[in-house]
Image 1 (cartoon, rainbow, N blue to C red):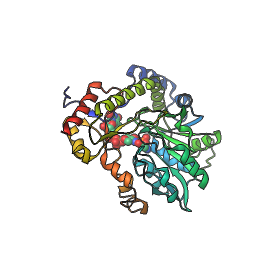
Image 2 (cartoon, rainbow, N blue to C red; image 1 turned 60 degrees about the vertical axis):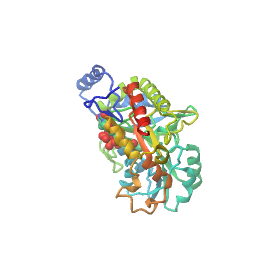
Image 3 (spheres, helix red, strand yellow; image 1 turned 30 degrees about the vertical axis):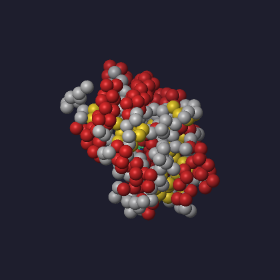
Image 4 (cartoon, rainbow, N blue to C red; image 1 turned 135 degrees about the vertical axis):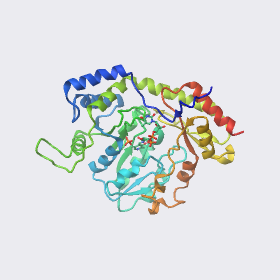
Amino acid sequence: MRIKKSEPILVTRPLLPPLAEFQVYLKDIWKSEWLTNNGKHHQALEKALCEYLGVKYISLFSNGTLALVTALQALRITGEVITTPYSFVASSHSLWWNNIKPVFVDIDPVTCNLDPEKIEEAITPHTTAILPVHVYGTPCDVKRIKKIADTYGLKVIYDACHTFGVKIGGVPVLNFGDLSVMSFHATKVFNTFEGGAIVCHDAATKKHIDNLKNFGFLDETVVVLPGINAKMNEVQAAMGRLQLKYIDGAIAKRKRISERYRKGLEGIAGISCLKVMPKVEYCYPYFPILVAEPGYGKTRDALYEELKKHNIFGRRYFYPLISQFPTYKGLESAQPGRMPVAERITKQVICLPIYPGLPGAVVDLVAKIIRDFAK
Ligand code: T4K
Protein backbone atom coordinates (compact mmCIF):
# COMPACT_ATOMS: atom_id res chain seq x y z
CA MET A 1 0.00 0.00 0.00
CA ARG A 2 1.20 3.52 -0.84
CA ILE A 3 -0.03 6.61 0.97
CA LYS A 4 -0.79 9.62 -1.24
CA LYS A 5 1.17 12.79 -0.43
CA SER A 6 -2.13 14.66 -0.32
CA GLU A 7 -3.41 12.40 2.47
CA PRO A 8 -1.00 12.47 5.37
CA ILE A 9 -1.67 9.94 8.11
CA LEU A 10 -1.89 11.98 11.31
CA VAL A 11 -1.44 10.68 14.84
CA THR A 12 -5.11 11.16 15.57
CA ARG A 13 -8.31 12.31 13.89
CA PRO A 14 -11.50 13.40 15.63
CA LEU A 15 -14.50 11.14 16.05
CA LEU A 16 -17.05 12.82 13.75
CA PRO A 17 -20.62 11.50 13.78
CA PRO A 18 -22.71 11.93 10.60
CA LEU A 19 -23.19 15.64 9.87
CA ALA A 20 -26.92 15.19 9.21
CA GLU A 21 -27.39 13.91 12.76
CA PHE A 22 -25.53 16.89 14.19
CA GLN A 23 -27.65 19.27 12.11
CA VAL A 24 -30.74 18.00 13.94
CA TYR A 25 -29.17 19.15 17.21
CA LEU A 26 -28.11 22.46 15.69
CA LYS A 27 -31.63 23.17 14.47
CA ASP A 28 -32.93 22.47 17.95
CA ILE A 29 -30.40 24.88 19.49
CA TRP A 30 -31.30 27.58 16.94
CA LYS A 31 -35.00 27.11 17.65
CA SER A 32 -34.53 27.28 21.42
CA GLU A 33 -32.34 30.41 21.21
CA TRP A 34 -30.46 29.00 24.21
CA LEU A 35 -26.73 28.78 23.52
CA THR A 36 -24.93 28.30 26.84
CA ASN A 37 -25.17 28.65 30.67
CA ASN A 38 -26.42 25.23 31.75
CA GLY A 39 -28.80 24.70 28.84
CA LYS A 40 -30.81 21.56 28.20
CA HIS A 41 -28.08 19.80 26.16
CA HIS A 42 -25.57 20.59 28.89
CA GLN A 43 -27.85 19.09 31.53
CA ALA A 44 -28.63 16.07 29.35
CA LEU A 45 -24.95 15.43 28.65
CA GLU A 46 -24.03 15.56 32.34
CA LYS A 47 -26.72 12.98 33.06
CA ALA A 48 -25.77 10.76 30.12
CA LEU A 49 -22.06 10.88 31.00
CA CYS A 50 -22.73 9.96 34.64
CA GLU A 51 -24.58 6.88 33.40
CA TYR A 52 -22.07 5.94 30.72
CA LEU A 53 -18.98 6.50 32.85
CA GLY A 54 -20.44 5.03 36.06
CA VAL A 55 -19.80 8.16 38.15
CA LYS A 56 -22.06 10.06 40.52
CA TYR A 57 -21.37 13.71 39.68
CA ILE A 58 -19.82 15.43 36.70
CA SER A 59 -19.40 19.13 35.88
CA LEU A 60 -18.80 20.00 32.26
CA PHE A 61 -16.13 22.51 31.26
CA SER A 62 -15.10 24.42 28.15
CA ASN A 63 -11.79 22.52 28.09
CA GLY A 64 -9.66 20.18 30.19
CA THR A 65 -7.09 22.81 31.17
CA LEU A 66 -9.66 25.10 32.78
CA ALA A 67 -11.14 22.04 34.49
CA LEU A 68 -7.70 21.24 35.97
CA VAL A 69 -7.19 24.84 37.11
CA THR A 70 -10.66 24.86 38.68
CA ALA A 71 -10.23 21.44 40.34
CA LEU A 72 -7.21 22.80 42.24
CA GLN A 73 -9.22 25.90 43.20
CA ALA A 74 -12.15 23.78 44.32
CA LEU A 75 -10.02 21.91 46.86
CA ARG A 76 -8.11 25.09 47.78
CA ILE A 77 -4.78 23.44 47.00
CA THR A 78 -1.71 25.55 47.83
CA GLY A 79 2.03 25.11 48.45
CA GLU A 80 3.61 22.12 46.71
CA VAL A 81 1.98 19.41 44.62
CA ILE A 82 3.67 16.19 43.59
CA THR A 83 3.21 15.47 39.91
CA THR A 84 4.66 13.76 36.87
CA PRO A 85 6.99 15.34 34.32
CA TYR A 86 5.70 12.87 31.71
CA SER A 87 2.44 14.41 30.51
CA PHE A 88 1.01 17.16 28.36
CA VAL A 89 2.14 20.57 29.68
CA ALA A 90 -1.38 21.47 30.82
CA SER A 91 -1.02 19.13 33.84
CA SER A 92 1.69 21.34 35.36
CA HIS A 93 0.45 24.59 33.87
CA SER A 94 -2.71 24.16 35.98
CA LEU A 95 -0.46 24.31 39.06
CA TRP A 96 1.38 27.37 37.77
CA TRP A 97 -1.93 29.20 37.21
CA ASN A 98 -2.77 28.51 40.87
CA ASN A 99 0.61 29.72 42.12
CA ILE A 100 1.44 26.18 43.27
CA LYS A 101 4.96 24.73 43.04
CA PRO A 102 5.09 21.47 41.09
CA VAL A 103 7.40 18.85 42.58
CA PHE A 104 8.32 16.40 39.85
CA VAL A 105 8.68 12.72 40.69
CA ASP A 106 9.93 9.98 38.37
CA ILE A 107 7.66 7.58 36.51
CA ASP A 108 7.24 3.84 36.55
CA PRO A 109 8.89 2.20 33.50
CA VAL A 110 6.00 -0.20 32.91
CA THR A 111 3.03 2.19 32.99
CA CYS A 112 4.79 5.55 32.36
CA ASN A 113 2.72 6.88 35.30
CA LEU A 114 3.95 8.55 38.51
CA ASP A 115 5.97 5.94 40.42
CA PRO A 116 4.31 5.44 43.84
CA GLU A 117 7.63 4.13 45.22
CA LYS A 118 9.10 7.61 44.79
CA ILE A 119 6.26 9.78 46.05
CA GLU A 120 6.93 9.63 49.79
CA GLU A 121 10.50 10.91 49.59
CA ALA A 122 9.23 14.03 47.76
CA ILE A 123 6.69 14.96 50.47
CA THR A 124 7.58 18.06 52.52
CA PRO A 125 5.63 20.10 55.10
CA HIS A 126 4.41 22.23 52.16
CA THR A 127 2.93 19.32 50.19
CA THR A 128 -0.85 19.50 49.98
CA ALA A 129 -1.77 17.19 47.11
CA ILE A 130 -0.73 14.69 44.46
CA LEU A 131 -1.60 15.28 40.81
CA PRO A 132 -0.97 12.02 38.93
CA VAL A 133 -1.87 11.45 35.27
CA HIS A 134 -3.29 8.20 33.84
CA VAL A 135 -0.93 8.52 30.88
CA TYR A 136 -2.15 6.97 27.58
CA GLY A 137 -5.20 5.75 29.51
CA THR A 138 -3.25 3.26 31.66
CA PRO A 139 -4.56 3.60 35.21
CA CYS A 140 -2.15 4.77 37.90
CA ASP A 141 -1.57 2.58 40.93
CA VAL A 142 -4.65 4.13 42.52
CA LYS A 143 -4.66 1.98 45.64
CA ARG A 144 -1.09 2.80 46.62
CA ILE A 145 -1.55 6.47 45.84
CA LYS A 146 -4.63 6.52 48.07
CA LYS A 147 -2.69 4.87 50.88
CA ILE A 148 0.09 7.47 50.68
CA ALA A 149 -2.41 10.34 50.45
CA ASP A 150 -4.34 9.05 53.47
CA THR A 151 -1.15 8.59 55.51
CA TYR A 152 0.04 12.15 54.88
CA GLY A 153 -3.36 13.89 54.67
CA LEU A 154 -2.97 14.85 51.01
CA LYS A 155 -5.64 15.39 48.35
CA VAL A 156 -5.47 13.49 45.08
CA ILE A 157 -6.55 15.09 41.82
CA TYR A 158 -6.22 12.76 38.86
CA ASP A 159 -5.55 14.15 35.43
CA ALA A 160 -7.81 11.65 33.67
CA CYS A 161 -7.67 13.39 30.30
CA HIS A 162 -6.70 10.12 28.57
CA THR A 163 -9.10 7.82 30.41
CA PHE A 164 -12.56 7.90 28.87
CA GLY A 165 -14.54 5.00 30.31
CA VAL A 166 -11.47 3.13 31.56
CA LYS A 167 -12.16 0.56 34.28
CA ILE A 168 -10.02 -1.45 36.68
CA GLY A 169 -11.61 -4.76 37.66
CA GLY A 170 -14.94 -3.36 36.49
CA VAL A 171 -14.60 -0.17 38.61
CA PRO A 172 -14.43 3.15 36.72
CA VAL A 173 -10.99 4.69 37.23
CA LEU A 174 -12.72 8.08 37.55
CA ASN A 175 -14.06 7.04 40.94
CA PHE A 176 -10.60 7.11 42.53
CA GLY A 177 -9.04 10.24 44.01
CA ASP A 178 -10.82 13.31 45.36
CA LEU A 179 -11.42 14.64 41.86
CA SER A 180 -10.74 13.46 38.32
CA VAL A 181 -10.36 15.81 35.39
CA MET A 182 -11.23 14.88 31.82
CA SER A 183 -10.53 16.43 28.41
CA PHE A 184 -12.95 16.23 25.50
CA HIS A 185 -10.59 17.94 23.04
CA ALA A 186 -11.02 17.14 19.33
CA THR A 187 -8.04 14.75 19.48
CA LYS A 188 -9.44 12.69 22.36
CA VAL A 189 -11.38 9.40 22.25
CA PHE A 190 -14.59 11.33 23.00
CA ASN A 191 -14.81 14.95 21.91
CA THR A 192 -16.97 18.05 22.19
CA PHE A 193 -14.67 20.04 19.81
CA GLU A 194 -13.02 21.55 22.92
CA GLY A 195 -14.29 20.44 26.30
CA GLY A 196 -13.60 18.90 29.64
CA ALA A 197 -15.11 17.84 32.94
CA ILE A 198 -14.51 17.35 36.63
CA VAL A 199 -15.78 14.19 38.27
CA CYS A 200 -16.51 14.41 41.99
CA HIS A 201 -18.24 12.24 44.55
CA ASP A 202 -20.77 14.43 46.38
CA ALA A 203 -23.42 17.01 45.59
CA ALA A 204 -21.87 19.80 47.69
CA THR A 205 -18.56 19.55 45.81
CA LYS A 206 -20.35 19.57 42.47
CA LYS A 207 -22.25 22.72 43.50
CA HIS A 208 -18.98 24.36 44.53
CA ILE A 209 -17.33 23.43 41.21
CA ASP A 210 -20.38 24.65 39.25
CA ASN A 211 -20.17 27.99 41.06
CA LEU A 212 -16.47 28.26 40.35
CA LYS A 213 -16.92 27.70 36.61
CA ASN A 214 -19.67 30.36 36.46
CA PHE A 215 -17.93 33.45 37.95
CA GLY A 216 -18.89 32.35 41.48
CA PHE A 217 -22.58 33.18 41.01
CA LEU A 218 -24.89 31.58 43.56
CA ASP A 219 -27.96 33.31 42.16
CA GLU A 220 -28.78 36.38 40.12
CA THR A 221 -27.23 38.88 42.53
CA VAL A 222 -24.96 36.85 44.83
CA VAL A 223 -21.33 36.14 43.95
CA VAL A 224 -19.75 33.97 46.63
CA LEU A 225 -16.39 33.21 45.00
CA PRO A 226 -13.90 34.71 42.55
CA GLY A 227 -14.96 32.18 39.92
CA ILE A 228 -13.95 31.97 36.30
CA ASN A 229 -15.88 31.47 33.08
CA ALA A 230 -15.24 27.86 32.06
CA LYS A 231 -18.71 26.81 30.94
CA MET A 232 -19.41 24.36 28.15
CA ASN A 233 -21.80 25.72 25.52
CA GLU A 234 -24.83 24.01 23.98
CA VAL A 235 -23.16 23.18 20.65
CA GLN A 236 -20.33 21.43 22.47
CA ALA A 237 -22.79 19.58 24.72
CA ALA A 238 -24.89 18.48 21.74
CA MET A 239 -21.75 17.13 20.06
CA GLY A 240 -21.06 15.15 23.24
CA ARG A 241 -24.57 13.69 23.29
CA LEU A 242 -24.19 12.57 19.70
CA GLN A 243 -20.71 11.15 20.32
CA LEU A 244 -22.10 8.88 23.02
CA LYS A 245 -24.13 7.09 20.35
CA TYR A 246 -20.92 6.13 18.54
CA ILE A 247 -18.41 5.80 21.34
CA ASP A 248 -18.57 2.04 21.95
CA GLY A 249 -18.00 1.33 18.26
CA ALA A 250 -15.13 3.83 18.17
CA ILE A 251 -13.38 2.29 21.18
CA ALA A 252 -13.84 -1.23 19.69
CA LYS A 253 -12.13 -0.03 16.47
CA ARG A 254 -9.28 1.51 18.50
CA LYS A 255 -8.86 -1.81 20.30
CA ARG A 256 -8.58 -3.67 16.98
CA ILE A 257 -5.99 -1.17 15.70
CA SER A 258 -4.00 -1.50 18.91
CA GLU A 259 -4.01 -5.31 18.67
CA ARG A 260 -3.00 -5.16 15.00
CA TYR A 261 -0.02 -2.91 15.82
CA ARG A 262 1.07 -5.28 18.60
CA LYS A 263 0.98 -8.22 16.20
CA GLY A 264 2.72 -6.31 13.40
CA LEU A 265 5.51 -5.09 15.65
CA GLU A 266 6.14 -8.43 17.35
CA GLY A 267 9.74 -9.57 17.45
CA ILE A 268 11.36 -6.33 16.18
CA ALA A 269 14.49 -5.96 18.30
CA GLY A 270 14.54 -2.71 20.27
CA ILE A 271 10.84 -1.89 19.72
CA SER A 272 8.49 -2.34 22.64
CA CYS A 273 4.84 -1.61 23.24
CA LEU A 274 3.36 -0.79 26.65
CA LYS A 275 2.29 -3.79 28.69
CA VAL A 276 -1.42 -4.63 28.71
CA MET A 277 -2.40 -4.56 32.38
CA PRO A 278 -4.62 -7.37 33.64
CA LYS A 279 -8.26 -6.57 34.46
CA VAL A 280 -8.14 -3.16 32.78
CA GLU A 281 -10.74 -2.05 30.22
CA TYR A 282 -8.91 0.48 28.05
CA CYS A 283 -10.06 3.22 25.69
CA TYR A 284 -6.89 3.20 23.48
CA PRO A 285 -6.33 6.97 23.07
CA TYR A 286 -2.72 6.58 21.88
CA PHE A 287 -0.45 3.81 20.64
CA PRO A 288 3.02 4.56 22.05
CA ILE A 289 6.08 2.52 21.14
CA LEU A 290 9.51 2.78 22.73
CA VAL A 291 12.55 2.72 20.46
CA ALA A 292 15.66 1.45 22.25
CA GLU A 293 18.55 2.47 20.02
CA PRO A 294 21.01 -0.30 20.96
CA GLY A 295 18.50 -3.01 20.06
CA TYR A 296 16.86 -1.28 17.10
CA GLY A 297 20.03 0.12 15.59
CA LYS A 298 18.46 3.52 14.81
CA THR A 299 17.48 6.40 17.05
CA ARG A 300 13.89 7.29 17.89
CA ASP A 301 14.24 10.54 15.97
CA ALA A 302 15.61 8.75 12.90
CA LEU A 303 12.55 6.47 12.90
CA TYR A 304 10.24 9.45 13.48
CA GLU A 305 11.74 11.16 10.39
CA GLU A 306 11.60 7.94 8.36
CA LEU A 307 7.87 7.61 9.08
CA LYS A 308 7.38 11.22 8.00
CA LYS A 309 9.09 10.42 4.67
CA HIS A 310 6.30 7.88 4.16
CA ASN A 311 3.70 10.54 5.00
CA ILE A 312 3.06 9.07 8.45
CA PHE A 313 3.00 11.66 11.20
CA GLY A 314 3.47 10.06 14.59
CA ARG A 315 4.04 12.33 17.58
CA ARG A 316 6.60 12.29 20.34
CA TYR A 317 4.09 12.52 23.20
CA PHE A 318 5.64 13.35 25.71
CA TYR A 319 8.89 14.94 24.60
CA PRO A 320 10.40 17.05 26.02
CA LEU A 321 9.46 16.38 29.63
CA ILE A 322 7.40 19.15 31.25
CA SER A 323 10.29 19.62 33.68
CA GLN A 324 12.53 20.54 30.73
CA PHE A 325 10.44 23.54 29.63
CA PRO A 326 11.79 26.99 30.66
CA THR A 327 8.95 27.60 33.17
CA TYR A 328 9.94 24.56 35.22
CA LYS A 329 13.56 23.66 34.50
CA GLY A 330 14.93 25.82 37.33
CA LEU A 331 13.06 23.81 39.97
CA GLU A 332 15.16 21.53 42.14
CA SER A 333 13.00 18.51 41.29
CA ALA A 334 13.49 19.20 37.57
CA GLN A 335 17.28 18.90 37.58
CA PRO A 336 18.82 16.41 35.10
CA GLY A 337 19.46 12.98 36.61
CA ARG A 338 16.62 13.28 39.15
CA MET A 339 14.14 11.31 37.03
CA PRO A 340 16.15 8.71 35.09
CA VAL A 341 13.15 6.68 33.89
CA ALA A 342 11.24 9.68 32.51
CA GLU A 343 14.46 11.07 31.01
CA ARG A 344 14.99 7.76 29.14
CA ILE A 345 11.40 7.21 28.00
CA THR A 346 10.93 10.75 26.69
CA LYS A 347 13.85 10.09 24.30
CA GLN A 348 12.41 6.73 23.16
CA VAL A 349 8.71 7.32 22.60
CA ILE A 350 6.73 7.70 19.40
CA CYS A 351 2.92 7.60 19.39
CA LEU A 352 1.77 5.92 16.19
CA PRO A 353 -1.45 6.94 14.40
CA ILE A 354 -4.60 5.58 16.01
CA TYR A 355 -8.21 6.63 15.39
CA PRO A 356 -11.40 4.79 14.49
CA GLY A 357 -11.19 5.47 10.74
CA LEU A 358 -7.57 4.32 10.36
CA PRO A 359 -7.48 1.51 7.76
CA GLY A 360 -5.95 -1.79 8.89
CA ALA A 361 -3.71 -1.73 5.80
CA VAL A 362 -2.11 1.50 7.06
CA VAL A 363 -1.43 -0.12 10.43
CA ASP A 364 0.30 -3.00 8.61
CA LEU A 365 2.27 -0.53 6.49
CA VAL A 366 3.45 1.43 9.54
CA ALA A 367 4.60 -1.81 11.19
CA LYS A 368 6.41 -2.83 7.97
CA ILE A 369 8.20 0.53 7.69
CA ILE A 370 9.36 0.19 11.30
CA ARG A 371 10.54 -3.40 10.66
CA ASP A 372 12.29 -2.58 7.37
CA PHE A 373 14.03 0.52 8.73
CA ALA A 374 15.81 -1.60 11.32
CA LYS A 375 17.55 -3.63 8.62
N1 T4K B 1 -3.83 16.75 30.49
C1 T4K B 1 -3.44 15.85 29.57
C2 T4K B 1 -2.78 14.60 30.03
C3 T4K B 1 -3.66 16.09 28.20
O1 T4K B 1 -3.25 15.20 27.28
C4 T4K B 1 -4.30 17.29 27.81
C5 T4K B 1 -4.49 17.59 26.41
C6 T4K B 1 -4.73 18.19 28.82
C7 T4K B 1 -4.45 17.88 30.15
C8 T4K B 1 -5.43 19.46 28.50
O2 T4K B 1 -6.74 19.24 28.00
P1 T4K B 1 -7.40 20.32 26.95
O3 T4K B 1 -7.30 21.66 27.61
O4 T4K B 1 -6.64 20.26 25.66
O5 T4K B 1 -8.82 19.85 26.83
C9 T4K B 1 -3.11 17.95 21.53
C10 T4K B 1 -4.38 18.49 22.14
O6 T4K B 1 -4.60 19.85 21.79
C11 T4K B 1 -4.43 18.37 23.62
O7 T4K B 1 -5.82 18.44 23.96
C12 T4K B 1 -3.91 17.02 24.10
N2 T4K B 1 -3.86 16.92 25.54
C13 T4K B 1 -2.52 16.80 23.54
C14 T4K B 1 -1.93 15.49 24.00
O8 T4K B 1 -2.59 16.81 22.14
P2 T4K B 1 -1.24 19.15 20.16
O9 T4K B 1 -0.61 20.48 20.32
O10 T4K B 1 -0.38 17.98 19.97
O11 T4K B 1 -2.39 19.20 19.02
P3 T4K B 1 -2.26 19.32 17.45
O12 T4K B 1 -3.04 20.50 17.00
O13 T4K B 1 -0.84 19.26 17.04
O14 T4K B 1 -3.05 18.04 16.95
C15 T4K B 1 -2.57 16.73 17.12
C16 T4K B 1 -2.92 15.91 15.91
O15 T4K B 1 -4.32 15.80 15.74
C17 T4K B 1 -2.38 16.47 14.62
O16 T4K B 1 -1.81 15.40 13.91
C18 T4K B 1 -3.58 17.00 13.87
C19 T4K B 1 -4.73 16.19 14.42
N3 T4K B 1 -5.96 16.99 14.53
C20 T4K B 1 -5.98 18.01 15.45
C21 T4K B 1 -7.11 18.77 15.60
C22 T4K B 1 -7.14 19.89 16.61
C23 T4K B 1 -7.04 16.72 13.73
O17 T4K B 1 -6.99 15.79 12.89
N4 T4K B 1 -8.18 17.46 13.88
C24 T4K B 1 -8.27 18.48 14.78
O18 T4K B 1 -9.33 19.11 14.91
O19 T4K B 1 -2.13 18.96 21.49
